[in-house]
Image 1 (cartoon, rainbow, N blue to C red):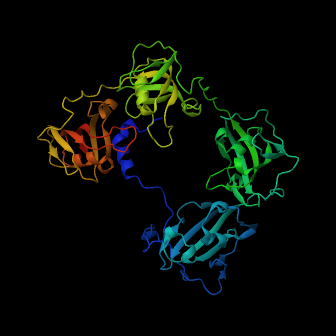
Image 2 (image 1 turned 90 degrees about the vertical axis):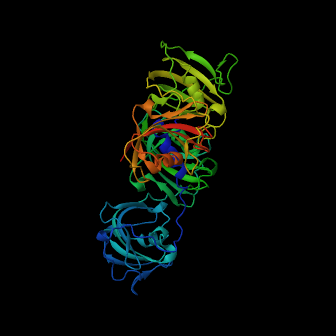
Image 3 (image 1 turned 90 degrees about the horizontal axis):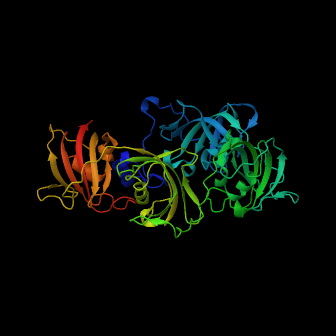
Length: 529
């Protein structure tokens, strides 16, 4: 529910403004990046780094390897196994670019890795065996360099993948069916008496194959069970698990339509799972969807701002929160089609500020409720999430219980002259107007690399409170460069103890839930660290 933390609004804005783009696959660099391994800890390169000797075994891919220490035992690495290993990687010039010599062994599920270069050369290794692998440029990991790479790999442990079932290609004719059309047969009966509810968590082992026998997932090969909430699983898997009991093992053939349609890293045809239900973790049942979730009933009342509400429970409190207070609440939220999208039920009481950091509809509701009240509210889209990613669009419906009111210090009074800066205000190159309120002491000004401690209060041009460290009762500490750009520019002109009023243009433009246009901040530079 919370869109941004009260204590970090300026930090949050700067992070949004400078956040990196979504991760993209590494591209081949025109010049190799420097090694991340300090010179003091550089492992010595082997004599044959960069070029495989003539006696090395060469694979079809162009990868070559030699065994530099034999392993022990009869267990060898297969394409679907899970391994623990030690590795050091060198470029052709002998520079080490990756190693875990000073850390624990790495863990790698071979059935999920796309590291083609050395994956092929690992197959067939035994525990304790060491191999040197030469990977040509076309298969090298681009983030390690643009040329060929040499790997020294020691196999520490191998967890064998489950065998492919004989009947993986098609479901049995005599199998049982779930509501979504999946076919299953019980491999081992369980000892439990109850099935999991849709809202329960389950702990289970699972292994999945495609119909041609390719394994694409296995908690057994990974060496640890998985935990999932039942109703958040894909439909076919959800229905299969919802009729199991603790201790039961079953094999399930799930048709493509209910397996994982459209999920990029999952097979798109029929899949087969072996499931073992280890435990059911009971969770509180979700709130019941209101009858009038699609629209407010005719008996609902309306606030001045346009929120419809019904009082479904009266408390014994007399005070209502002010906009600078905080509240403890229980809540549940639905979309008009009855889908529950957020709730505090099962998580404990939630604490929120009345104004800063919550949707406008909540602020409107909070300032009308008393402690103990329980309301059902219909919040129109313009007072709701307004395009916040992963949040509902349009009207939302909430049931809110106000559990406790937390008093906070009253913010400074709204300045009389907010509409425009005075004529004698200083102006920065970025267009920030600065009016000096109180002089400071000293001559040192913060730089981008320093940490600053500031007290601040911000308002919209109409006098609405945006945020205030005064209300929280302590100043805000942050690296200067992590604050919003207008604040960064202004603070670099200030000295410790100085107070100023800032008119910052377009401070929040493009940020959902935040005011647009010019905002006004009163700022005191408390300290420079």
